[in-house]
Image (cartoon, rainbow, N blue to C red; front, side):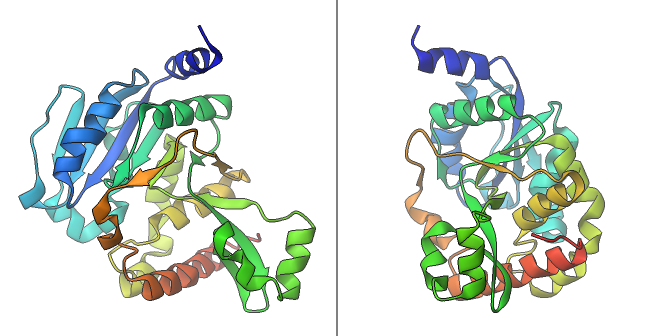
Length: 265
């Protein structure tokens, strides 16, 4: 047995339920995502929240729960993925977007990472908090060259204080209490979300991560994927398709959450 097999067997000793929001990609879920998850012994059940009646499908396997959330989608939007915590029976929760082309290696890697630090949120897509002359901001490494002339950013970079403050819900594994905390505290920022977010509850990942950090003091664990992560060809039509507005809104919401939680990063 090689080291890779040993690692994956250890990861499969633990169990996690998976939550997926189905909006426009039922074929991809049925042909690829769900079969891949069903092949992973570490995945106990798969919870599919269907937001649209015309893309609904019946459960293809006893381990798959399909929920008709057509009406709830209008009320909760993207936060439906955390509403689904009421169906979760495991301590760890795997969360996926429906445009991810996942492999079993990705799932095993997340399970193994979570097993090593079960009190933290783990994921493949990190976002970093940093200060600039324009105030606190967040972003990913590939855009940070834009701030090389900003003295506050340079100070933070040189001091080694650029650490991930969040990982995206595109593919993450989190302790169930993090989802419970989101649902009990979401009212604190809901006015801002309902006034500004498109689609509804865009930024649910921001609030989940920052709230959990404020409550526990624990930063998320950003993982380098063992196999390249890919998305479906239609992924550009997703919620980040309107790039200028999407980025502007998320930066504003990030600052609003930090202020609301009195969170110093």
